[in-house]
Amino acid sequence: MKTIISSTGNQLKSPFDLRFGRAGWFCLLDEETGETSFFQNEFKEASQGAGGKVVEKVVELGVGKVISGDFGPKAKDLLDRFNIQMVIIPDGNQKIEEIIAQLK
Amino acid sequence: MPRRKRLRKVVAPPGFRGYKPYGNRHGKKEHVDLLYEEYEAIKLADYDLMNHQEASEIMGISRPTFARIYESARRKIARALVETREIKSVFGNAHLDKSWFICDACQARFTIPPTLQEQKCPLCRSTKIQIINSKK
Image: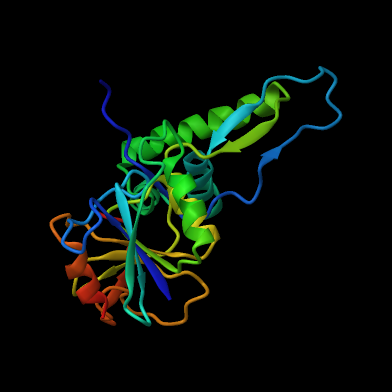
């Protein structure tokens, strides 16, 4: 299953981003192979509807699980509709690699 | 700046988009917006016959706030009936209480979509998970 983690930067050492729609980067992790890749959030500066657009992208990528600090009401509704699992980590001091280590 | 509105927990959204009067003689009028939390208040108090204290705990708000929402809901419905207006259900300040879970081991909160069978934490694989209910 593929997982997306919101991130503030494009490295494994980057801190985790508590925002979903307006996170700077996303880390795409393939849980079977352990491969990771980063892509920039093109909707970060969108005036509105960033969360919804990110969800569309997430659905396109065929992701099954999203990890972030919180989700907006629209993003929540959409993710629910597409049966994508949402995971909220309340603590923003973790690094991406630490979260990935927890997942294994 | 006004105080921010706490999200009201709604167990299930209303099963309708709206209600329309029929056979009305006064043409079409502006509709009444019934918020999700107002629908939930009516449901808890008048359909599930709970008292306001119990109902407010389920919605995660105080009893006086519940009473205000409930009153606003009744007034809107009365207004729609008397003035033959349509009722539309609108999202409002609701937080849909689709089963959110919390993991006892790592404190992560998460949902379990119906496509997943396993009841365990998606982060640390702990099986010590709890469904989040009304925060008291």
